Image 1 (tube, helix red, strand yellow):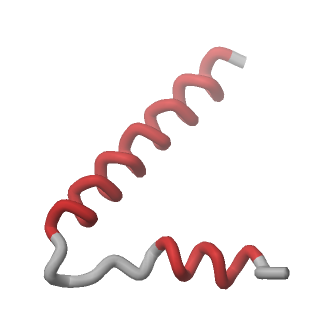
Image 2 (tube, one colour):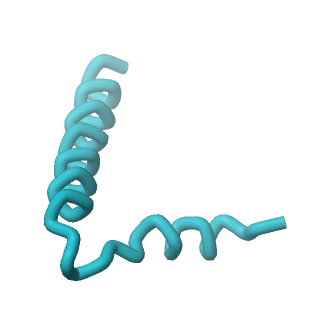
Length: 43
């Protein structure tokens, strides 16, 4: 069974020569932060 730390490290291993992966990851983190903030303010 894969532990959570190894899974997170595999997700964060973005190749340096792949700008699409970096852009997608940055956008994903921004949307996740906005959703988390909105949910925390609503509750």
